[in-house]
Image 1 (cartoon, rainbow, N blue to C red):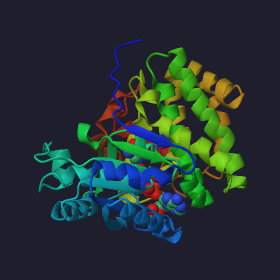
Image 2: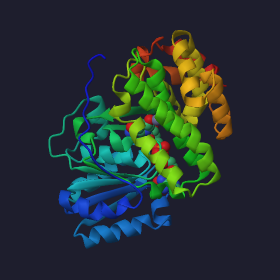
Image 3: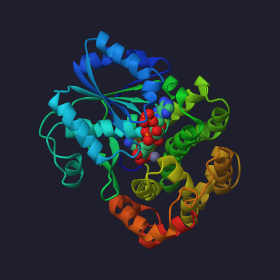
Length: 381
Ligand code: NZQ
Ligand code: ZN
């Protein structure tokens, strides 16, 4: 096994009902909190937000709500949240929602430490001058795994650049992972999340330049969990056992546990997808679903044995790509870029954007440049 780095400074509280710990834990970190949620209002509708606000108040924490984070969160939204945090002396930032809210919250905390835009932290590599408040994350979607890493994907809408901000300070201090919060997710968002989890795992699994028993087995068991559980869950959206399985798979899939020894090519399909959701504002899971089979076929010539192993270990079939296609169909996620409204005339522009915003795609086992990405987009139609 070659040299890897491994660092997860986050404390986790996991399990149905664990949300009840939030107020008590936040009070240990600070007395003034900014609580970010999604602008769609799901946390208000389900009564979760009121419950959390009451809990925080009872524990002596003043909470300022910021209910404005959109899917594919914008850098301008982050800047707005950071200004509010700065002006109110916020000591802790809580992100309660899907990957978009959690990512925006990480960036709000980071940008609140100085007056620069979050974009300057990314582009100009600004280092925080002040203290970055601790970040507490509460995922409400099983998908991104943002609760277990320091990545935050934000978009500068003016230029459609969707990029990952990753700083030592954007590791969450605490993540409270309560699968009961995902019970209110509709079928489509649930399925999009399942595809995202599968892709985090399959990208690392297929492209790894070396296989170890532990890494392969961990990824296989997480993929199998998602492949087997998602169809069952879609037939019974209120099943807490299925929700718990998906939530835990999500947390592991995008953490360093699953990425340790990942090899080159990690997240290469993600790089291609971010260009799509950064331009067309589609759901991340939809974009991945449309690209998955073409990305697999592009990679097949250099990873034949691994695709066979995928088929056998995860699906109990001989052909990993055909089995993935059947699964996508079964969970209602088999569609094309055309189905998502993405125009072929934009492919060159999108591919150039992917190379710029996700330069790691060049480290795919068969390097991805503009013509190669255009060919994957074309094969996704
Ligand atoms: O606005 P709200 O009300 O929160 O509605 C959201 C949104 O419309 C809704 N939702 C969230 N929790 C809900 C709920 N609806 C009902 N009940 C609940 N419990 O779900 C919709 C989608 O939310 P979003 O946060 O956008 O979804 P997801 O969790 O899939 O996150 C996607 C974002 O994460 C980034 C993606 O690029 C994308 O921007 N990623 C972040 C990663 C990371 N930080 O490690 C890695 C991922 O690969 C990914 O790139
Ligand atoms: Zn993803």
